[in-house]
Image 1: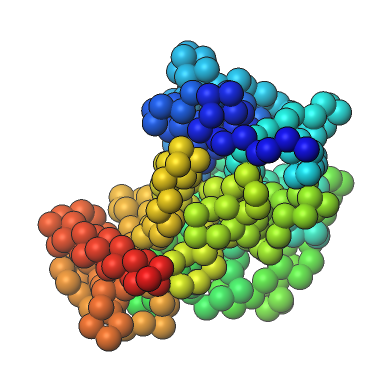
Image 2: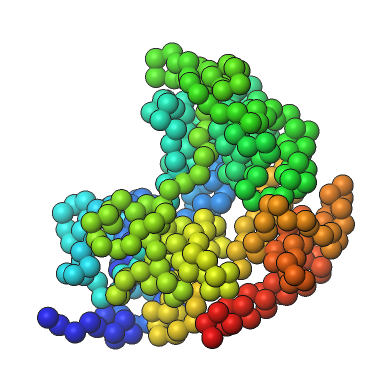
Length: 404
């Protein structure tokens, strides 16, 4: 048996499975940090790495296409000497032989492996497979869905999370009649406090979106391969032309089930993103130990993919710092942007640090025993900037305290 090769050895090979923001970010950041070994980037989609947040906005509006979403060009990846294996799926991992098996039957050896396979939209069994029912994760999903959004179309969105509400906003701009079905009593209830969620609900209602809250899809009416109506638990029969399933995402870990890697709502890692000897995970697929929050968590956010990629590249290059990011998400809907920093308990009492919900700009903060825990804001400004700095300092201090 040969001794494991140091990832910083110029003869070592880093293999990254997953070629979206997190995977491509690790590859390019390794080069920026001076890593000299071989890098192979494997991706299931045939396209070069591209940005996903615009899929629910610019792509559906028809104002953005794949050419404007790119995260890295052929030239940039070639200059960085990143070997691309796109349009091919990883199907198994052998950590003893240190090989990734591809659907082609080929095996790719590694010295260091990065798992960045992201997540897949959850499907509702009674709806999946119908010709007019969509999910939204890839550029192909967005392009197919966009073609169905013609003025006057009756669109039902099942789920009122971030993606579902962004699509509702975009679709109304195209003259689509939008209905949202949500089992909870308010939209985005797991991320927002009741007052903010009610404010968000009011914005959508003012733009003509109809909500069916506290109910769910129990059955469908179909005509051939198309759904024509949704039967809701409250007795409503909602006629539809198009349906979007927006009920969350599951981490892409099926290919790892026989690998011995610990799986529990994602790839379980330590506070340095390490899943096993010479194996790391990053982005939506990773469930990591957050030292500042003293919990294990998985974050499906663009910021986690980017920050996680930079941090993991540093770790592979030899640094030892824990990964303890300030959780962050944003959403663009109609004419406003909502941003959330830190962990805001939906049951928390928030304090207005700036403005009010009736204004065009506001900042709400959550405190616990006098310590800032999270911020929700509309718009930008010095108050938000100050609170972000304070929150980052709190996270750094808490992470150091836990490690000590």
